[in-house]
Length: 361
Image (cartoon, rainbow, N blue to C red; front, side):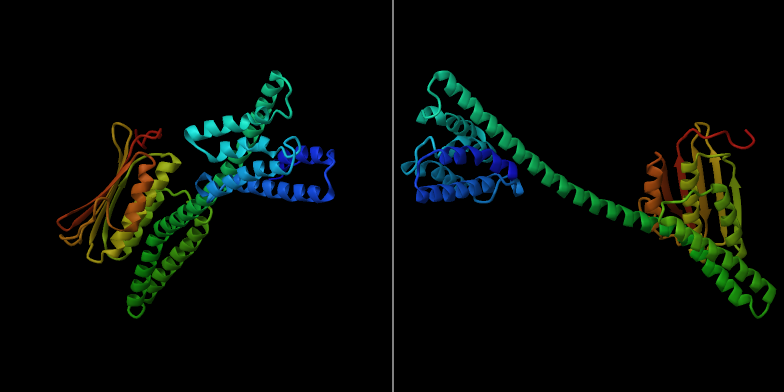
């Protein structure tokens, strides 16, 4: 805005100061110049859609204000028509823009007040076009700055939404198993407290350890998803359900995995184990993890006691499996959940990510 004022005001004021106008005419000159500058800024101010609202009327008023005062003032003094090419370049589109800019650029040849020769006419046409281009560039920069601010706001909102979604997924993935196991341990301790106090105390102790682990997991969520180990989760998935009398068979032989693959597969196993704990009818669970000849790592978790009419959906029911499907997709992996008879099968596969050879290879 300041630059626009500096582009327009100095020339008319300098010429007016050198004239012999009376104080009244000088005051009228200043008022008209202020009105012209105000309309100029109004027409060149970015707005939604790239144009000010009702710009046709304000632009017509600006043109009238540029030429009607010539009845009172000399064309050499009231020379603001030199600057009309700028808003014409900003506001108009298509052929009208070309015609209007070309017409306003020839302002000086029309009135012949500044250029006594043809070379001077050419110079002032170029002078007008230069200022028009400067005005257009300033307006475009302001428009782009406004669009950038809007984009930043939208990106910040999207980032907040993604962070909330990540927080929800991480809390579900990290705490689902711990809380389900804690409920199981508490129920076992409650049943054993009268008939076998030492066993009940052991269950309470294990439940306390799970609670502490859950508390530690919550602290890791704010800083991003923590690293997890498939081997550790396999051991936990074997011990906790076994404490409830479930038969758990574990066969995990994948060697040392890349951190990202290890964490994702450990998360899949934890979610699957959480679902096993929530299926009270399950009596047997099988967990296998192996490396295929092409280097892909496959994790399979199967448990019984599922209703035959259960429908896991395209990638498994619930927020947890949908979240895991997205995590695996980032590694090029796949996740499927099937119900066959009374058995539920969770199958995860991650293609080779540059892992080391399995144990015993």
